[in-house]
Length: 115
Image 1: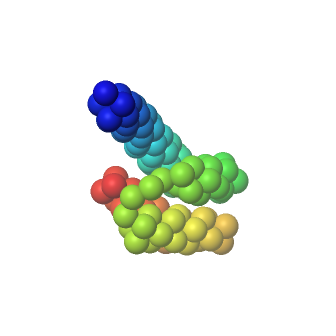
Image 2 (image 1 turned 45 degrees about the vertical axis):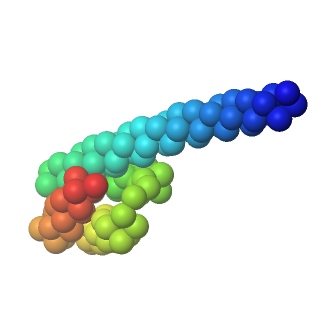
């Protein structure tokens, strides 16, 4: 009788732990998806500001994009490359290079959207 009780208790605990870990994973995935959306939105806004030659506003959006991109999980190589493109776009915007900055930001957008 004790063996049956112990087995039932072990099974119940295993199921409850499994259910908890599944909900946490789903929540983390949702947060990662939200971070991607925020990052894309900031890069797009930064690109608009760069094209208008409003470099100070672009810097703020690109800085926000870099901060929100830190929360993205997934293909690390793609994320690293996209972050590098955002940084290069930010540097080119500081230098006043509209075309070069826009090219880097468009490349970063393509990479973020592929996630």
